[in-house]
Length: 162
Image (cartoon, rainbow, N blue to C red; front, side, top):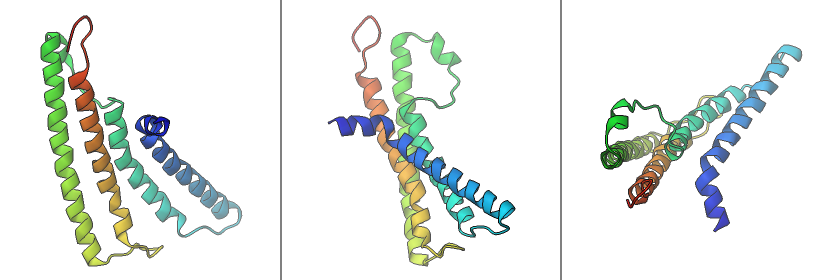
């Protein structure tokens, strides 16, 4: 149970940390190799690019889980508490539909890439691995939106029942 709680709170953070650490180490090593030893790692730029891609898609579910997305809530602040809650749930439902649609589309793109047999430039690895980034990102986003939606729907407002 502790593992599930930890994953709930820190899964995206752990993934983002691994991607960032890999990016920093490879980029730093490449800078040192190029400017001091006059040679470099030809494959490090490609791995760094893929870490950046995966971190971008993973960060979507991170901001959903932490409710740290950019929003304008001037209208929401003047509404009564019950109306605020309904609007929050409606907004989350729309966000869910959007990310579910994106998840479905990313699976279609992944299938198309798998059929094409594309490989990356330097490393010659299948592009299927790279195109799992949007599937992972949007899939995690759908899970996190459902989680936030359930929490908001079941949460009691201050001073009364839900």
